[in-house]
Image 1 (cartoon, rainbow, N blue to C red):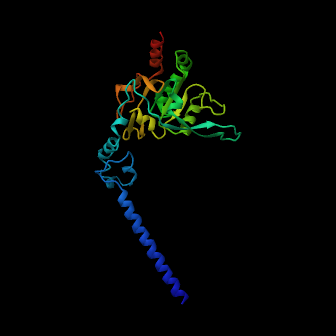
Image 2: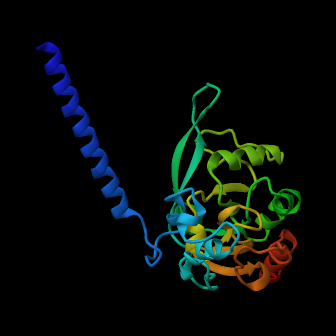
Image 3: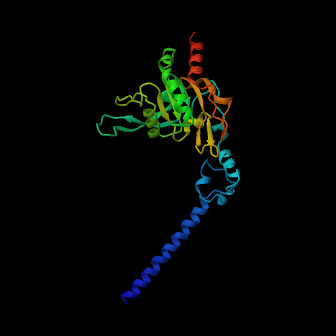
Amino acid sequence: MMLGCANHRSKVMIKALLNNRHQIIGQTKAVLPTTTTKIPLFAAFATTANPSARGFSSSSLAGVKAYRSALDKSWTTPVEEGGEVPNVMFKIRTRVGSGDENPFDWKDLTSEDIFKGKRIVLFSLPGAFTPTCSSTHLPGYEAAYEEMKKLGVDDVYCLSVNDAFVMRSWGLKQGLTEDKTVGGLGFEKVKLLPDGACQFTRGMGMSCVWDSERGFGERTWRYSAVIDDMKVEKLFVEGGEVVQNSGPDPFEVSDSGTMVDYLKSKSS
């Protein structure tokens, strides 16, 4: 009798599990995107690991082209001089008073915290630890930091679509001097600004995707700017436009020398 009850309970449980499985599969199918639905970047590519199931073969470029075309046009059209920068939230790590081996905590920093009521030099680059960014771009601004301050700039920020941990590690690797005061923003001179969710980059119209070229995914195009009280005073965009999946990595106008020359021309 007991064995019969146990078998009955087992059958009921198996039936319930199968019903739940069918419900989950049905719900999943309902939310999976179709090839005709406009979806946010990356969403279609997260649905399956099988390239052919996503509507393109592994030997064609159709998939990666669709990947890049999913970017909203406003994300890839640079803001004009005189326009306002996007007011977004940056997730940074700030030093706290603890004496342990990880004396940091999360802090929300908005665009207004950085730019409102100030004149800021911002330069943006595709990625921490990458060659040009590490050998020339960041070192150039670090070396010119004091000169830029004397030319009427309140501070200098370096932005990349990386997280706060990567940006700090890169800064240390670059030999930047840490700001160890409680509440500090990481480093004494150039401040490294993590735009991990790409929100500021999209709002500036500087979003680009490197897939077959470098495999970076969505990053920022290389540029520099002077931002005065939340408005773009001057903008230097490499190549004059944002190029998706670019082979070349132009570095002609966003360098520190060009920025110093511009600041000098405005101070004379």
